[in-house]
Image (tube, rainbow, N blue to C red; front, side, top):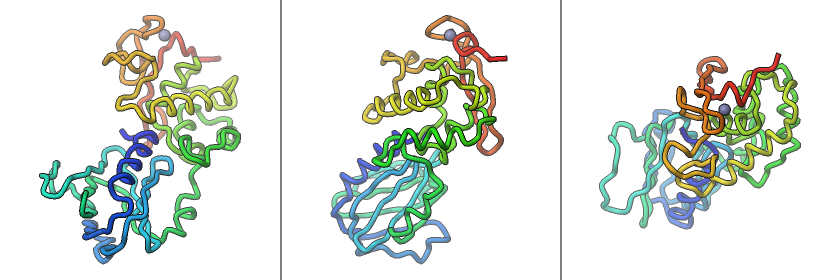
Length: 262
Ligand SMILES: [Zn+2]
């Protein structure tokens, strides 16, 4: 599942491939965009804002996409065979050196670039963005002290970027049970700082590592390790479900390293 670090890396790849290039074809395969025509526009750049991807043109338009759980963008050279089934394609951006193809993208829209800020105004500061502001993230986190910290940490209105992996790993590293109310967490600033540290450390890595050990199966402390021994204390890793559908997530934790407080 893409998190903010993946989207920032993706934006950098798309920027390197497309910036300065003219769109020979911009083919949107979603009904709402059937009449959108950006062909002839030059791509001025690509950027990320949390998990949102923004591809901008020189004529003041932005292609905004969000991959949610399963979407993807791929880059192909001219004549290269596209991977993935054609019916999953939602958008094709063709330039001379590269064609960018978006698959299974649930959120896809074209809007004037000057309306980006308004469209994304709900987002908290972007953990990996130039607008990062830990005090503002903390203020937003503390605004709802009774909410479970494992739910609040991935609320994009608190901070833009973190998803379930960084949430689980940061809570483990701080020894905090994910069901703890926000107001009951001893050092919230340190928790926010941990999320930032983990995401920064991984923004240029191909595979996420929070343990310092790059061996497969030992890269993460608890995420995805249900039933296996905690890498620190040996207690089997457990899962709990948090949040309500469709935002429900499986949270991984070590019950010994992250004891529940009474
Ligand atoms: Zn443990």
